[in-house]
Structure formats: C-alpha cells, structure tokens
Image (cartoon, helix red, strand yellow):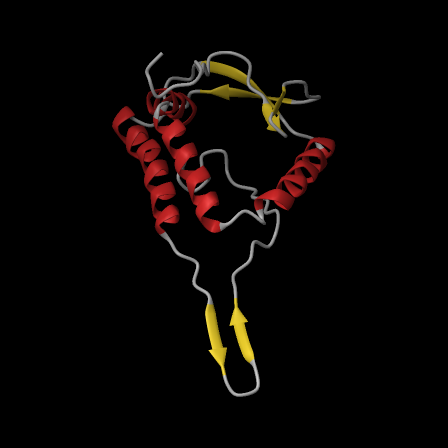
Length: 163
C-alpha cells in the first residue's frame, strides 16, 4: 500500500450502496455491470429502493446539522483532506472507469485527475459577505448552506461532474 493510502480498495468484488458510512449490499434488484469495450461481465451492483433513498436522505439531513454550522475554512480543510485521500487511489479509480465505461486508459486517467482539480477549484473560492449601512440600518447578505441535494444522473456521468 502506498503512503497516501489508508486502505486497499478493490473493485473486483461485491459492490454496495454506502448509506451513513455503512455498506448496503443486499437488494431486491441488481444491475449486471458489463465492460462496453470488451463485453466482459463485471459485477452485480445493488439497485437502491425507496427505503434506501429515504435512509440516505435522513442520514444526509442529520449530517447537515453539524456540517452547516462548521466555519467555511474548516469545511475547506475537510475537502482538502478528502482530495488528498482521493488522489492516493487514482490508479484504482482509473481502472474502474476503464472497465465500467470502456474508455481508453488515457481518457479515464484525465477524467479521474479532474476530480482533484474540481476540489482544488472549490476550495479556492471565497464566500463573500455583503454589508450595506446607512444612518438607520445595517443590511448583511450571507450565503448559508441550504440543505440536502440529491442528483439523478446517468451511470456514465463524468467523475468530476459527480464529485
């Protein structure tokens, strides 16, 4: 294991939906992964049901309670830490992307590398606070976290778009 890695990741075995930090491998329905470039059968992927979605949203709403009150600089540090962790697994994610999309390795590697750039860009942003004063009042505009967001996206959406 390289110094930047905290665990070995294998995409050759059982896939799971991760809900509240726990792997959910059981499902009533599964999708059979196939490498579109070779036709090779890959892995069974559990298809989430309504109960899984409800559990994931509830967990996200609970996590939002503490995340939303963290100062922006602390949130940025956590994103930097995740980016560092991610970068230690670029080879594994590149191999996965090649298998599940059939992309040539050089294009998959560029896409996986873009995830780090996506995090770097967002960490570099500042959240401005606007303040307007007159003799009678002070008005302040602040950008506050709004809540949980869900995304329904195609299975082959780019890695950087899904980050």
